[in-house]
Image (cartoon, rainbow, N blue to C red; front, top):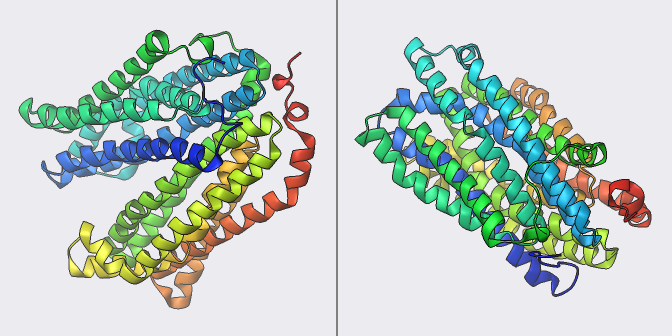
Length: 456
């Protein structure tokens, strides 16, 4: 096939690293969008920050929904490439893009027209709610760009060319950094300025993707962006992507409840500890997620090609990579939690509370990375349901477990222990699950799992 990197031959370590590093960098770039907006808006005042924060959970949910077609592209296209079926690869690429456009228009339209009643739930002051509604409506009209760019990213990752999304996303981030102060301060548009800067940046990212695919690349020999949806491809994409999108969306609701509980039992320090600690942990999470996504694409190609030995070898290689990185993170969090937290929040009471959070959270870092690595294995095999079941079950178990620990007198630290315990459980359960079904999965083979991959 044209424009793809064949991952079914060659040195495993080098291929995984070359595939993973741009994916990790792209993840950090996506994080930097919101951090950049927050940094500039913070100069306006706390009310402006509240506007961004109020919309934050909705943008998180939107990003989670877009994973349906990002993961759908990564797995379905990569498995088609591994099976040497160019027609299926093109069809899956076109179907993922078409579905992404439909979902983005529906979800964006829903948030645009229902912005006011949705944001009233927060009970903010009227003028803050008004500003938040305006911000959400601007951002929601950019959802087609965001969702389609996510699908394009998945297609490139599947083709083993993860550096292309990195360069394109990096260009968007640079543009956003430049435009934020201009729109916010020079044009005196306040929080709306941040929204317009994001809108333009995401539109440019989308335009570069289109230019790359239509003019510079001949990826998969060329494929249509829009197509009439066919059942076998559409069903396959939803089977792959829906569980991933669902588990990430539901996770947002769990965090909302835990944030509220942390605020009740720990005051603003408790809330700050949980939210800031989560951002610090996101650094390690995004690193392991990069290896997981690379592993998913690598396994998808090799599993479809029948190279089961390379599948196992890549799994072992990634486990060693995450083991080393996870050990380093555990040592840093457990023994240097105060120092790390003080980099972000220098107030003594804050970084001491944050140090306790990082110490408790540090005990679960290896298992968090194990969970994410195993997600990559299951996704590459085209089995996205086991990670979804495991994550949803234990993420929601955090709520009663946190309340139980608090009732025992743990205070706000009971929440941290609930998060730690369930993270450890998720990693172990997914590992055991895979070991239990491994022989059957390899014996079945992809052609018997999904008719869309047959060469008939």
